[in-house]
Amino acid sequence: MQASRECSARRVCPLVLTALAEGESPPATKATVDQVGSVAPVGSIANASATSGNESATEQEGRIRNAVQTAISMQTANAKTSEEVLALTEKNFDALNIVNVVTALHRLAVINKVQRANRDRLLRDPRFEQLVESIVANSKELSPRGAADVLWSFATLQHWPSMLLSPVLTSVAGHLKESAFEAQHLSTMMWALARLECKPVRLLEQIEEQAILLLGEMNAQNCANLAWGFAKLQYQPEQLLPPLTAYLTTSDVLAKAKPVEVADTAFALGMLGKRGAYDELLATLAARASPEGILSKFSSRQLVILIWAFARLGATDGMPAGLMDQWVSTLRAAHETTPLLVRDANNLERSLMALGLDASWIKRSEMLNTWSDLAEGRGQLQKREYTDEELSAAFEAIDTDGSGDIDMSELQTAIRAINPEMDDATVKKMLTFGDEDGDCEVSLDEFKKIMRGGRLEGAKSS
Image (cartoon, rainbow, N blue to C red; front, side, top):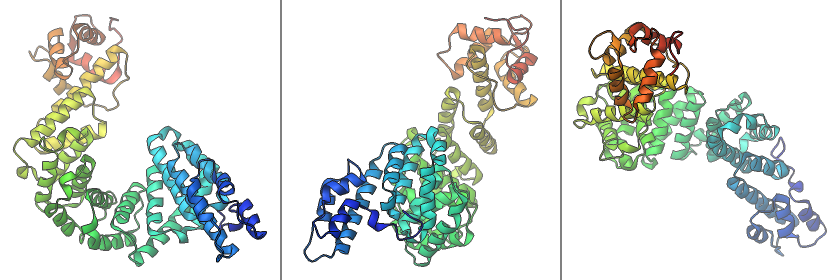
């Protein structure tokens, strides 16, 4: 594909075009398939290349070129690795049209969404850069779906070359002017723009206007992506929120919503909504995240987002009785096994405190897991820093007799609350690891040193 719309059409398939020039029937199947690759859909190309007595050589050439481009897209969509995609586009570059390029970028994004370790290598590959340059040079040919796909691909790759900004957004603006985007395209673009941290305000206004007209065509994913995108970009869609809320509340769109869609919608309401304005919708979201719904499928982060949104909007009164406690207990069990990421733990702690609920277990579980990992030689010092007050509170919760020292029995009780399978030998190893003065107990000062400096100088090896 060259830098203009004239993509060197007469190099699409040399053997075919030579035959046409000599007045012969094109060697349709073999030549075209060999040009594209050995696994091209032979039948479809053969049909497209069949000679018609009423066609000119130019018309035949055009049909064959279209067949080649269709075959390239089909092979690209079925490629399993980045190298397969790049090799295919490199071999047939002069035959590519804009759809082929968009398809290649989309497939590369899908592959590297899973195989993230190879992403940086992909982004440095000259063949990938060539595809980017093709989008820039031929952006006027992007269809509405193509423009949305390009944004999705680069958002998924978390890569936004500056050279793409003007041509791609110009394409988006043109299609918005013609009201050419479908509902799913608008939501895809909003999600992608937010992921790319790109905030073209005038375009966001137009997306909002057109989304209102297309709400009836949106599913739960479309609505969640649309709302999440506006929220992440801190753009207040004042005209969209009321009809979007009514649509989600009165239709059955959320009846089959996935956890990520529930969480993303709750996040958007938490960021954009006002207290009391969306209680009915929040109650609908809560029902989806109940034991009768699909609570067991929610990740810890998704539950943290739900709790944060309900706390921020003061909407817990409208929740089913006991549901907040179920969310918290589910999170607590998960956190005690696999600690939350620091950001999520901090968010959850602030939310629980705002709701007047106990949040001390969050840091206490982290500290005990850190202590256990250090004693076993499995981990490094925890990534977050604790204040004296936090360390003292956790210590006092473990030191149940208030003696000022944690003994073997107290440590067993505390650690088995988060890991019932922990054996005595491991608990003893923890105590020995933290016991600097050899009295078989861990004082507050020793506990602080464990959390702040790892192994103590005077501690014995187990």
